[in-house]
Image 1 (cartoon, rainbow, N blue to C red):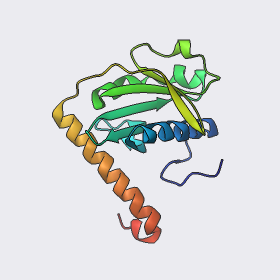
Image 2: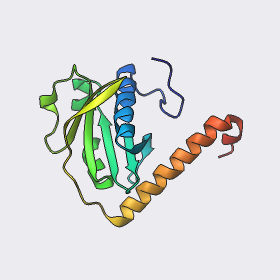
Image 3: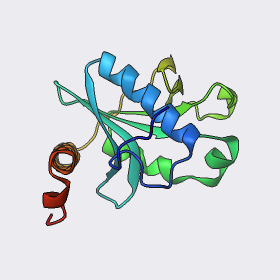
Length: 156
């Protein structure tokens, strides 16, 4: 797998997590969603993958690259207030049985992904939907700018 652009990896993600994210993004793109990785949310937390479709539906996918990663991180519970559906994405090596039942489940590798369990739909506040959608749009535009004009992006 080739090195991802800086907008996708900030040095905190393992090779496994980057591969899972790539597969998840391919799946979501095929389902009509655009995605942004490492998106800061309203509460300051950073979601691994946020997806938005043409109808305005927001998904958050929390990537877990190992059992230890899952057990050490409980911030995912706060993501539900920021999306219509919350998913976990794991590799085939992680036991699916340990993932919470109240979230969707995706199994992924660098080449693709499959939804094993659909996420329960949630209702989010209209103001939250607007704020997350604006953050999504700004992050996508800023990252595109950095790709086209890396020197100019330093002024942002």
